[in-house]
Amino acid sequence: MADADPDKRAGPEKVLVIGCGMLAREILAVKDLGGLDHLDLVCLPAELHYHPDRIPAAMDAAIVRARKAGYGSIFAAYADCGTGGMLDRVLERHGVERLAGPHCFAFYQGLDRFETIGEGDMLAFYMTDFLCRHFEAFFLKPLGLDRHPELIADFFGNYEKLVYLAQTDDPALERVAKDAAQLLGLAYERRFTGYGDLTPGLRQAGGWRRAVGNGAERR
Image (cartoon, rainbow, N blue to C red; front, side, top):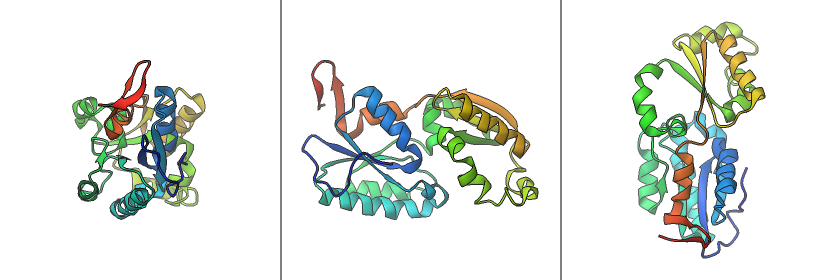
């Protein structure tokens, strides 16, 4: 999901956000709520969540493509996401900033809060709105749990609880999270996070800020 064609020539006032496909809906919501009209968005495939070693090369190619399209300001809507610092090396080479933190489960909760509760969540399996919407496609089918439920113990036996980090108040998504916890044999906890640090991160993307009554302007 994206609201920009990376091959389209960029206007001088635009900042391109290259985001994780798992964050597309949330990025667009923050953009809309904040009136961040200077942001364009393209997303890398959500499936890279399972292949973090592929994220740096995919980001590198996306940045090169965006530069050719005329974007001078680019922001990565990614945390480290399991790349072990490899993503940062790519971004540093291109002079591109990213969201702070190790993964989206951290910045949704806010990094300070995540660090505070981190030890208590060592055995937590996190779900987000996206993962609730795509629980079957991202977990049940790829892991074969729909055909072999006996594998649940192998994949989830070391977890103690399922923590649903809710970006929105959606009873249907919470029902999915509760059912998932029951299926996996885990205790259930819901935390409403909203968009967490994604909101200030996007507001600061490309060195911009909103000036009340004056639109977007440079810092």
